[in-house]
Length: 225
Image (cartoon, rainbow, N blue to C red; front, side):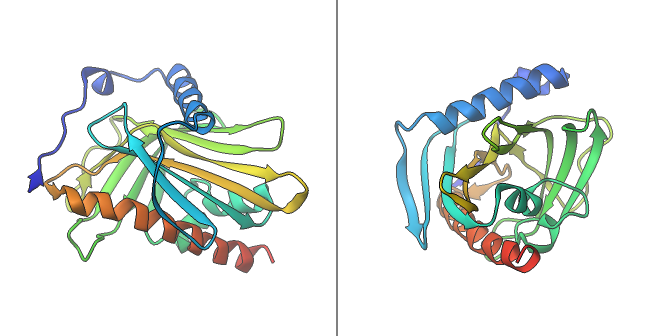
């Protein structure tokens, strides 16, 4: 059975207030990190666990990934950070390009991420426009915090289905007693839009997230060894 594209609420279509919106998203991602309740395991192995629970943002799932990566938080962040022309474009098989649409501050910006077809081309190329906030915590943790946004300089493009990232992000956390290792915790809750069989969506994210960790570890070793 194919599920139709989900309609976003009026608040998602409203004009953003970048500072306030970004802080609210970062607060929400931190709540996800601290709340251990309700998660159900859906994939594991090779030191990586992926779990999910129903999203409170849309009619889909919130996914949580966790794994230990050999590399300092700064080295891991260098490989995962959202940056035009950065390493993420080179190693992440789910990212074909990353653009900065508007830089608001050094740590707050609007981006466009393009993704290739996936799941044996059942999922066609997508693009996502997000408000992104980078935060650093006192313990050395580096985080990205993002949510979808509309932007006048980034209308829909031919050949891409516009998807929507609800509050998502990652934490590159120092591992106590292990200065050369990082605990990477990731959160995804993405509306791919379009007409997709739900079983395709449900199988794609856990598999994709597990592959993300494996490819990331190879990249950290390659560029920071």
